[in-house]
Image (cartoon, rainbow, N blue to C red; front, side, top):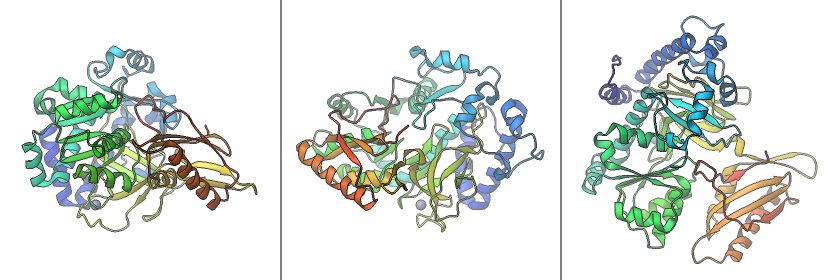
Length: 460
Ligand SMILES: [Zn+2]
C-alpha cells in the first residue's frame, strides 16, 4: 500500500482504482490495515476510545471485536471523543452559533458539520482534511464510473458545470465542502456553483437556466420540485447526470427524474458521519466503498444480519476521519446486503436501504397488538397517487396522522386529498388499523433546519 504524504490526492485516486481492480481481496487488505491504524490512533489520542477499548488486544484489524457506539454516546463524551484536545464542545458550540463562521475552517484546519437530528439529538461533527480528500476522491471515482468515457466527453462538451443544491444558512456538510473547494481554488472552484435550497422556486429555475449545469447534485426533495418545473416546461437545463442525495428515494422517484430530464440519475447513500459510504449503480444497488468504510447490517442485539434480509440497524466505520473517529457507529438505518455479485460488475459489496428505523410508524391495534408501517410503504403510496408533489405525514397521537400535501400544478387539491385519503384508508384497513384518524393539514410540508423534508415523522 502506498504511504501517505502531505498531498494525498494523487495516490488516493490511483489507489481507489487499483483496489477495485484487485477485487474483494485487495479491498479487504486495505480495510484491515486502515482499521488497525484507526483503532491504534483512537486509543492513543481519544480518552473515550482508550476507555472503551481497554480490554481489547493490542492490535485490532477485525471490526467485529470493537464495541459499538452511537451519536448519543459520542455527543455525551464530546471532549473525550476527539483525538485533538483543542476540539471541545464549548469551542465548537461558539463556532456553529456564529453565522459568520459558516463554511470557515474551525481552528484553522477542520470542517464542521451539524446534523439537524432526525433521530432526536443534534450532531456536531468535526471533519479533517484526510476525510474531505478521501470523500472528494470517491466522488471523482463515482462520477467517472457513472458517466463512462462518453458521458465524460458529453459533460465537458456541455461546459462541465456542476450545480450543487445545498442548505446555505447553517453548518451542513454539503455547503462546508463547497466552501472548502472554493477556498482551495483549482479546477473544482471553477466548475462548481452552490444554489440555496431555500431560494424561491421561480428564482432557482431562472438561476439554473442561466447557469446551464452539466451535473446537478442536491437534496432529493429539491430535485423532485425541479423535476416538476421541468415537466411544466419552465426548466430548460440538459444535465448529463443528476445526483439526488440526503433523503431516501424510491425507484419511482429516480425513474421520474430520469424521464423528465432524459438523463442518467444516480444516488448516494451516506451520512455526514461517512459521506462517501456508498454510490448507486445502474442496477439500483448501493456499492459500499469498502476500502475506506465498513458496513455491518445488524439485528436489535447488534448481531450480524445475514445477506438477503433487511437489518434492524447498520454499524458504519469511517476509516478516513481521524479527528473524530466514527468506529462501529450505529447509524440506525435498515439495510439489506446483496447475497450474490451485482450484475453491474462492481467488485464492491452491494446494499439496499429501507430507511431509518427511527422513521417507522408504530400503532396500537384495537386488540392491543402493535403494527409498524415503514416509510417506504407510505412513500410508495404517495408515489402512485396522481397530483402529489410532496408529502409529509406526522403521527400526532398514537392513532392519529396529520397529512401535509403539496399538490402538482393544475391538480385539484380536494380531488388529490380524497385520493390520498382513500389510499391511506385502504393501507390502514390492510394493517388492522381501521381506527386511525386522518387529518388534512392546511399547511404545506415543513422543511427541517437542514433543508431536508422529513416525509414520515413518528410520535416523539
Ligand atoms: Zn451494482
